[in-house]
Image 1 (cartoon, rainbow, N blue to C red):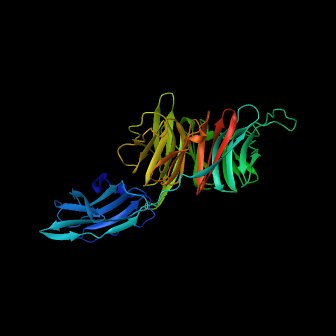
Image 2: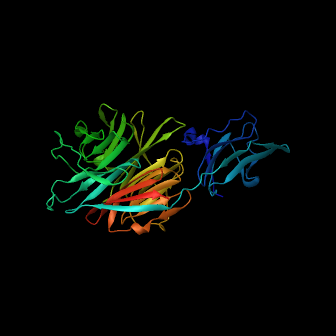
Length: 437
């Protein structure tokens, strides 16, 4: 049993994380109390309150009525982390101490760990492109009948000749992928149908596209190109993330970060000139605000940065990336539950304040990973070079090696039982679409 102690003396912020469970009860002195803070498939976070009990006395932590750890506290309250639990299993934790021979028991906390999700998916592969080199860069799922992928797709015309005007999007209508041309022509964008680099869909009639230098607001039929962001940029936009139509972030090369509040753009000074490759946000029910993180790298020098964006002040804090040594390309997390940073390695933390990122063993992938997205901490996907698709079900990783190819998967999106990943295979723009059985 791994056992981690986190003292409140180092900051109450360690206790602030997202949970679908209520905070455990606080017990009046001199009670010995336990409060369940959160749990996953294989982990639990439990708060211990000592009250006025002897701070030098042994306290015995029990799991299912068996003592698993003996501790001695020098302060009042602490948060404890337990792993190596089994998925979908009932657990009871309690604690006991002794004062002048008198047994003092805590209240019990009981819970059932999350179940794992299935690795079993049915996959379909779709390829586009008849000349030149076609590719998809990003994908967004609205629902199972409404999925968008963006990039550059070169097809032949009605006479069979190479058409120089590329398609820059495809749309899944529930049955087929339809080639689309999104008009981005504007005063700041002289190309009518430029390659589209990233997409973020709030709903079927509120979709944001970017060509890398301008933004398009798409209502499902018509696109309105927004040039007002252009003066704020010193490099291409790489990724989009937003909580709503009045809260959208873009990140890009040369340290670019900008925010849209629904009516105007504001540049956010990132404090770095590295290329910011990805951004993700997750709502924290304890702090009642979003936690937003981004990752930046320059592959030529292996410099890297992990940035935290305060949604209220827009202040940027650069977080520790130790002991990561190489490029970072993707970020995904559930606030306060689990954090992943990927690229040349797959790194994780249970808490953002943990001292170091832990590198996952390379026994299930040896390739560079490009993007990571998940439904929850027991259902997430990583994609990358040579058609790599990985799935974590809350307990184990699985590699869908039947999709290995001479290409790259740049982006992945998942919603409920659907996963879609996009990239290129040779000169073909490629979509691999999975449905959980």
